[in-house]
Length: 396
Ligand code: ATP
Ligand code: MG
Image (cartoon, rainbow, N blue to C red; front, side, top):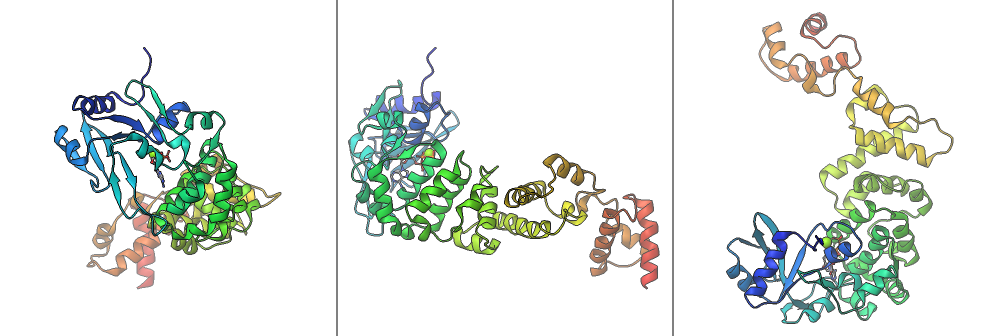
């Protein structure tokens, strides 16, 4: 059997729209990725039906912003995004169209898309609709703006960054005029919201070849207008590729000699991401002086330790490093992995001392934690009791 594009429920959505007299096709990145032999992640369908019509046709829908034309259709439990063919009106702020206008023609919809490879559509039967030469450009591994590149970047400056991000993800090159338009309009990137930039940076860091993008960011001058960017590409070069976007951010921070809060503020990182960066910064600073200590093996999770050691290994020449296996073993061999592993709790301390609860409990639990971690006493109730009562009575 020939494998068709999309999932059975997504093809069913198209069939249903067609039976109701509308046009409907697969569009966007999923079609591109399919042609590249990659499994599509988010499948998008574009249709001539307006949001209200889509909602009327399918029994189960969620409105994802019908002003912009997107309705989520639940088909056999699978969520599928269906967006009405649309064009975008004028862009006065270089980032969001002032208005979205629904149109009846697929061509109008594809024309507003950023690159020829992203302006492809496919019918439910797997027939490619290629109105802007996307297929040839993909065969040539070229990223080319649809229409006049400078105009398209003036409408939405994020497209410049997307072009560069795609070079890293796909290994393609940016077509000459498109590249020139990025260099000419680089300053406009400052109009783009940090949230959108951050999402693109995440994809760039997680890509197969981030260096390709870092070079283009510098060669086009985009780096001068981004919220924060390391001056020294060479340092970044030593750390690629990254295990994850988060590791990318950590290497970005160290390569740029930034603090965790600089990076977190500039790119609006989440609290979890910020904590990871500040842990790596702290661990890395200590690592420059000596091996990881027991405290560090205990305090930091494996991802922090791995990234820190990777940075240490790549940033410095001729240093003695430890492997991930060794790091894992060192961490596993600690008597406890967290305070939850302690053989006693606050209730036990109250029982042993016949004292009421209070701040003293937390303080003593923390002392016990240290004693167990440093193997001053074994992690069992009897040994801890003996050690604790002795120390407790001594301090009274
Ligand atoms: P990814 O694989 O990272 O998801 P993508 O191309 O699918 O890449 P999405 O943000 O999912 O990116 O967008 C889906 C489609 O919407 C794109 O393929 C493109 O056709 C269109 N699109 C997205 N962002 C823009 C933009 N800023 N300007 C014009 N068209 C865009
Ligand atoms: Mg996508």
